[in-house]
Image (tube, one colour):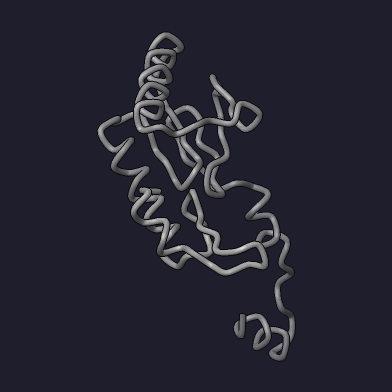
Length: 135
């Protein structure tokens, strides 16, 4: 957050006036602003997809992937983003992203997300059918 903008996040406490150093997600536009920043930062990299803090780098080969990851990390570093190593995986051949499984150039719904739909029993009375349609 810019130094000049911190005053807009000020709040009173028993220890005096406090200001945020980073954009708090309680602000109504924080999520939108963060996503726009991620899009502006990573948008020029055609091998990257991001949704908030989730960043996926996709490549055809391992060699290409190493180059793509390096370019992505350099871009994030230049923009002063930090990465949490414990939340980072590199080199996966399959990844779960936004409720889908991305693997081998295909995007499929995550079975764990669709299993409840598959497990629905067929309504055998009009009343059960009406209840089912209400959802």
